[in-house]
Image (tube, rainbow, N blue to C red; front, side):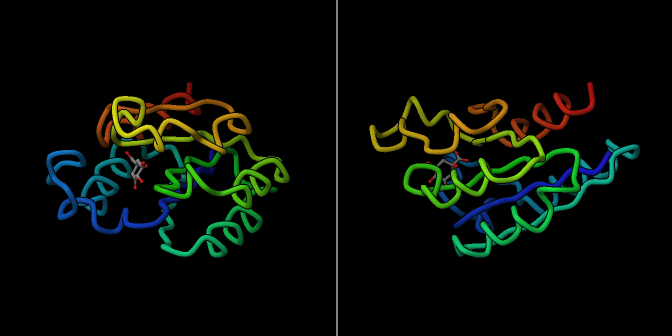
Amino acid sequence: MKLLIINGPNLNLIGKREPSIYGNATFEDYYKELVSKHDRVSLEYFQSNHEGELVDKLHEVGFSYDGIIINAGAYTHTSVALADAIKGIESPVIEVHISNVHAREDFRHKSYLSPVCKGVVLGFGLQSYELAIQSFVS
Ligand code: DQA
């Protein structure tokens, strides 16, 4: 099974950025754990701070991978382009968030991606990614 994790803007700062919300672990370290835990999954990871690069990546993998797990960061709440890209590809996409966006500011309650994703996992810290992988594997 071929899965890709896509992280959007500012998620390269996980571990340094607002640790009371996002924790102290870097995503790179957590990703290594995920890879070693899921040795039967071909797992890849892509991060970009640029909306168009995220759209390009969805187009690139979205007709051949078994699943995509996306944390689009703040673009979740603004990007019609990402929603259209997810709508336009064939691979199922799961939206994830580290924090519980519904317990935060109002502008984080709206997601352009949720209606076009297969499912949403949020609020479990970095474990949200693990739960999304499990949903593909099981
Ligand atoms: C986030 C939540 C977003 O509102 C925020 O802009 C992020 C991270 C999360 O994983 O909790 O950058 O997607």
